Length: 280
Image 1 (tube, one colour):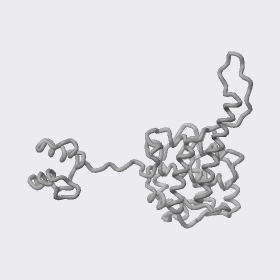
Image 2: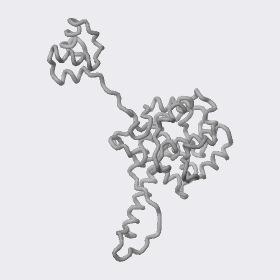
Image 3: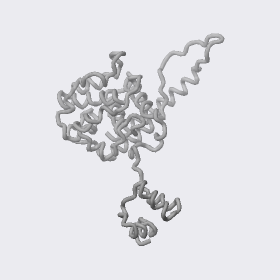
């Protein structure tokens, strides 16, 4: 081979036919194949690599179009857990927001790279919001998860830390069963105050302060990605009292089974919280 990437046969054919060596669309490759009859392996080396639909999304979360909605649901269930402290609740909202940015379009996400996520401006996000996924259940809805995080950003831009803290104490309960959150106006449009400034994925320090002027460090974003894979692995459990099983009725889980599930959920929750605290 005279070229470090392209085969000699291709280069010779291009020289004879006058085809530019970098023109490798399907029509050109079909003509090349008809005239030269190259091997399938050689043809595959000539086809331009197809960019990954979501280059930063964990590979273990690919191949299932329900993954993002399940991750949003898992995040929402923890945000609504009264035992979760307000700073962790803010970090969970940010985590789910980041998941929507990174997840592939077939799951309802935007499929952005880590570089694009860290450089995302309010103006650009506003233009992308119409293509973010929607679901019937508000607790699963990616667009609603984005709405909730933008409320945090807007509150942080326009109001005091006390207002952010108060918002952190709120849970993502359904206010109107007929209308999702994302269908309502943004409650804190201040997230658009700096339309060209990439500050939508800020660090959150140990006291709950958000960085208004920049995105989190790349290593911190890596921590969020790891937490996403952990969160999707966690069972979603509603803590409830075990009722006696009626004779002839449907099977209910036993107290021992529920205890095991709750223990597993607590373990995963603790892992997610440790990751969020470590990476800020």
